[in-house]
Amino acid sequence: MRTDWGWLTLPTDAAARRLLGCDLERLLDGEVLRARIVETEAYDQDDEASHAFRGQTVRNATMFGPAGHLYVYRLYGHHCCNVVTGYAGYGQGALIRAVEPLEGADVMQQRRTGDERRLATPHLTNGPGRLCQALGVTSSLDGHHLVEDPLRLVQRPPLESSQIVVSTRIGVTKATERPRRFHIRDNAFVSRR
Image 1 (tube, rainbow, N blue to C red):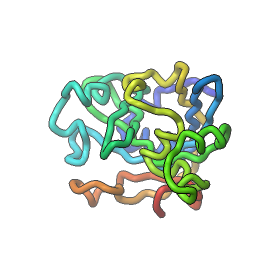
Image 2: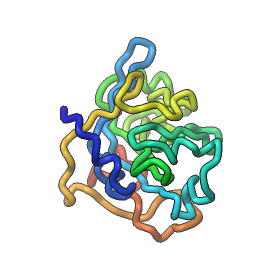
Image 3: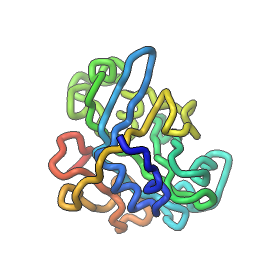
Image 4: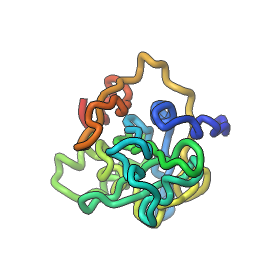
């Protein structure tokens, strides 16, 4: 695979689109878990819906760091993760909203809690909290550089524009009209169509 990560320094909307089709590869307790990114949302410090909107704090400092690191936070008791994009000093990142399991789905299923229908594919990893639970992404990975174990971002060729759906974000109460949600067209693992 190519290792040119310069595209992660693009503005977050472009980087969030480019993340679609890339893989997350997690080494967890001797097991390899691999999942394709199928849905993202873009956030930056000029966006009222972003954690970076009110400036840098201890909690969101990772968003203001260099591109290619993971920003992990808790929301309503669930971990969520963003890939930091852009340049250091300007808070921005792409929320990973959904992934498609490619390897280790049985381990991902064991890591998830809840009723049986929520553990079945495609519901296994179709939401930010669900994918973090399935892949074992916790606050301990906040600031982690995604070129190193135990969690790597594996670059894949960019998708064609016709394969990407652009819409408004889910679950935000501010800047609701902004088209900053991106997902792979017709992918069963997208959180909502």
